[in-house]
Structures are given as C-alpha cells and as structure tokens.
Length: 225
Image 1 (cartoon, one colour):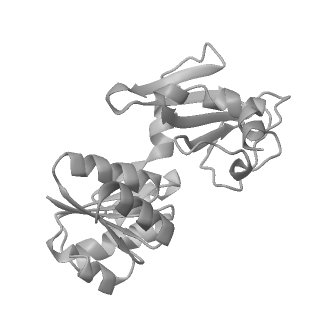
Image 2 (cartoon, rainbow, N blue to C red):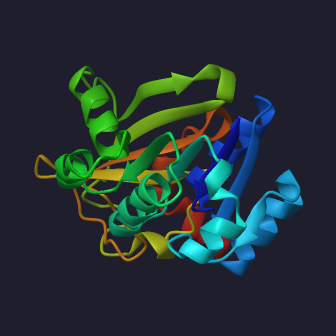
C-alpha cells in the first residue's frame, strides 16, 4: 500500500518507521529541513521536503496514487486541509487526521475526514480507567514497541515549576502529549509552563520510565547544565 504521511515530527517518524517495517511504501512530507534529514538518515529516502498543504507538492509526491493519507502535523487546520485536499482533489480512498484539540473532532468528521485520532482523548480515557496509587502510574505499556505511558504529579517544591517545557531538557525519547491541570486536559507546547500539582502524562521508553521523576526533581536540568 502506498501511504503518504504529512508531518515528520516524532509522531510522523515512528508512524513511518512502523509502516515501512510492515512492508508498505511510505513517503513523509515535512517542511523542516532538519527533520527531513533525520528521517532520511534513519529510514532512507522516504522524506520529501515541503509544505504538505501545497497541492503542487502533493501531486509531485504522488498523492493521486496513494491509498491512504495521514496528516499528523502539530496544526489541526493544516491536518484538516491536507486530508480534504487528498480526498477531494486526488481521490485518496481513506484519510486519517491527528487532532491536537479534541474540540475539533466534530468539525473534522462533519467535513468528511474518514478517521480522527485525538491523543488527548485516548490518554484521558485511559486515565479514567486507572486509580493512581503511586506518584508514578503506568497507564499503558506497549511492550512490543518498548514504550510506555506514565503519569506523575508535579510536586509543590519541584524546581521545574515556573519553567517552560522546552527549558527542562526533556530527553528525546520522551514525549509529553498531555497535562491535566485542575481537572482539565491541556495539550502542551514548548512554551507551556508547569505548575505545582499538574499531572503530566508522558510517553517514553521502558528503560527511562522514571523520566518524569527526574525532570521534576531537576536532575535532567542539572545534567544538561
């Protein structure tokens, strides 16, 4: 199956890697030069640099013969536009869009996107099934992939309080897709500042499942300095 993935960040990278391992033909469209180079170095010639919302670039990428288009950029509007163009202009049979803001799910479905994936909703649903018994809770372990979801609360005395996520020197093998603050889910970005009592959900490798405890204690910041 020929699959086009729009977005070469961490989600796009691991998605492309797994699809390639399953024997699919995959092309990733990514406008960031560094991310494209990383993809090409690790996965081979699978990345085309450019803006995935550009119809001319879509045509060059072979969107007309793609059987599946997946948009996983960090921008919901771009993901919607990419999937709509794939379906309406290039007649791609199936489209999947990543949703960063769960409130947009209804709009995506109304506008004909075949399937949406909201990381926030997935994690919140899993959290609802769990009763935290420790400061670090294993929410979901993907043993075959060597990854795990973990959750930890930011202690009131943590040196991480008041600092944006991008300043915490979070390891590359750790992704923080959700922060729960006062009972409400927040999809964080690099400038999101942690507060005492925040419940932080991370996806990381099994070898580094204590990463949140190290971040909140300031150990990763000290090591980086």
